[in-house]
Image (cartoon, rainbow, N blue to C red):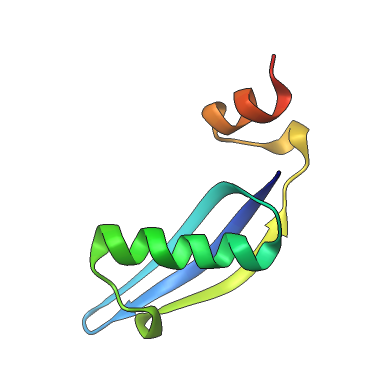
Length: 75
């Protein structure tokens, strides 16, 4: 499993909100799909109101989330 950083924006009427999420996934496509599912579930946003602009793999020394860092590095 790799750590990916997904960047995007939520477009709703009267609200534009940027987001950045770090998560574990096998491929970049899986990471984007997971973000669509999580944000849609938590914030009741439909997929056509979200736009993922960038999905990039994060090296282990640049992981910001302490829980993910612990899972990946194991130290």
